[in-house]
Amino acid sequence: MNYLITTLCPKKCPYCFFPSQQKGTISDMTLETFIECFEHQCKISLGIRRRVALLGGEPTVAKSFKDIVGFITNNLFRVNNFLIFSNLSGVENVKWLAQQCFEDIEFVMIWNSTGLSSYAHTLRKKVYDSLEILKKAKIKITASITMEYHQEVKDFEYLIDAKRNYNISNIRFALDTGSLPEFRTKSNTVFQVLRFLQDNEFSIGIDGCGSPALNIFNQAQIKDMLKINGIDIHCGGSAGIDILPDGTCIPCMPYLSYTGQRPKLTDLKSLDDLKEFYGFTPRTKMLCPAHENIARLNMLSLKKD
Image 1 (cartoon, helix red, strand yellow):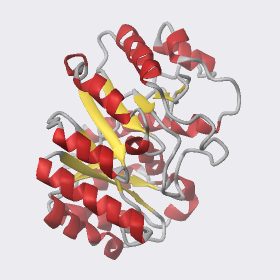
Image 2 (cartoon, helix red, strand yellow):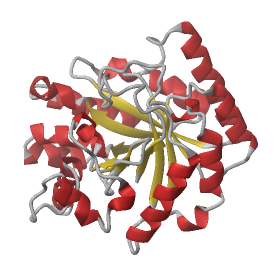
Image 3 (cartoon, helix red, strand yellow):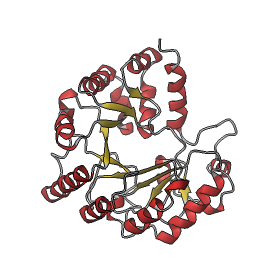
């Protein structure tokens, strides 16, 4: 499950799922709320892969960051996968994390579409400082990039330096889902970017939240994409309930725009209760379109040869 532990963030990414009217209205998740939701997650997810991811906003600027991370690391025997999705702007918390020598944490670094070049100077320095800290601590970093429809291969050359300077070799790749019509004529460019990453020996994962954009390609094009060596279509493909700072929950990020009353995670007896609350039909097996599409890609991958 994804825990959105704060609504605060120093960046203003154009493809951010968090509606501007909600930012700053809920503030930070308390440790008490996190523990309550985590215990309930363990209760209703028996037999299901327990994944805990911290998101925001920017999780490293949350006041409760240290307390929540400390609790998780003391309960790692109950967790299969622990990730922090971050733009690394909370340098003091990143430094604290590195000093704890938490080896079982994976940072998913949220890059702007052109790397750090468009960041304000003070923010750019904070991110570089955090990258140096994590590099020295040998904490694994995955770069999460969102391709915008106007971009070409040259716009991703900054990743070469990221790999050389900070040992970043894993990429979570997504398309900007807000520009699907424009992408319809850009399939060849997408393939070129993926092959560029492959040629430079990056491991590539198709990000679950960006995979609905793959619906713009026909099956033949998707099969060509699947022929790229080392591409992982399972990346981000597990059920991802998103828990907001107040303990309410939604089935996936696009539902942040939902204006009605949201259920508290602790009020759910099963994952089916969440699907019923948001009006999913009984035939819907997945909690969001991204996961439905990941399943479709998995079927195609079995036939790619």
